[in-house]
Image 1: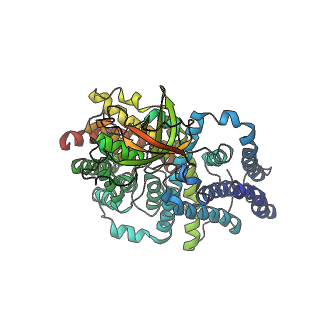
Image 2: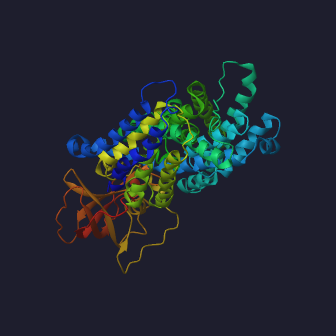
Image 3: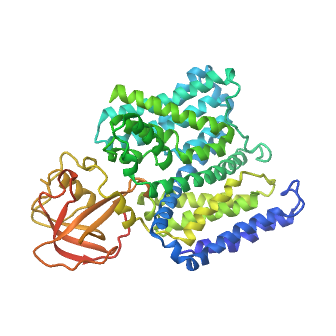
Length: 354
Length: 225
């Protein structure tokens, strides 16, 4: 079972350390000791220690609740990996192929018009939200205005065909719910984009996403070089923050039973806030959340809509990934802003359409 | 974290992804259809890690310490190797899902002349919809056993994307015309029987099956429906 993994630590030192030993100087700027060496060995030791840990800690690790947490935690990570890889590939392709010239030709010059265009472009990326973060980062690096990239980031996971179909299936073809979800999610994305367009100049305290130029220093000039550099740059921080989000989401998922949430279902305002918070904390895939929403039978349709609109726009793993990709100062404003706008817009749309 | 260590972490994560998909362990966590996307992702991550070794001109680029956290899923995958979700989650979410979710308006009635394999989720929803398609038919259910209040139950979880969105379905097994031994908790069984008419309608109580045969079976390759 663990054959593959055991060979990795065995092979990795010779592969990764040999080039370092050959050229010790440039890999550790500003430090004297070989910290590069040490970090590699720490990582390998942690991996090697995990194997005997299974035998030594069999009893505490066998605890049912912990096992359930571990399963859900790995499930969220394993489910996200292909989408994250796809997102990083797309982001790399954007970095390698899309030029600023093309962007300026395709997008309307006026950012107020470009925002809804980005929202509609989101229909074309049929994936979960994990892919959208690196893609939005890639777009911003290629000269797409930050506010426009943010609209794409918010719209893509919520309005694409895969989500529309799964919502229709879960809600038994209730077209009003499908329509309300599409309208509300699109509105949230566009409203947030416009907020950033309008306020960027007037409110200096508003932070824009930090767009790091991948491959600037050493990616080389070739397209392939830019592609690999962008992939390196996007993949690991995004994945690291994703794992942090998954730790929290899995704990909420396993240890907070639905009945606790349902106990407030008959109080209108509390119900809306509770489902918005629940959507943020459980961090479900946008293609699966409709099936959970439909099971929240105690709640009004409007509260269910809030759950469906908030989840793809913002949840704990997205917040962590965005902090990693766009900077913590940006995320500290963006995350609460999206939560509030999504909750309010979904409540209004739900009251009108449902 | 420096780039050499990043390469090690990425290689480990890629190897974990490859392992769970190649061994079909991924069916504990995600939809079985994710197998090939996972294989491809694992290979790509290993290649990306390898590119670090081949492209030696890269300088050390310090990144966020959050990258260290990527060791956690690999360590959990190695040290815990968690099983598929089972009784713990089933006890908490039993038949939570409203019957209408699976209650197709036009269900073909099950054949009367032979035994039909029916999923737990389908059985629960057919019973909830007044059981017209179910009454009088012999069905076969596969699931794991739980005990409570002197009765025993067959359970199955369903997922749509991953184990985070699992729902639990449970059917009480009553003795039918033949006496059956009560299986131990958590064993997987195949039960043949008929719906106890009137049980589980509109989800007010658990649907029940009057069993005529129970046999233990190995855990299925796909633990979720």
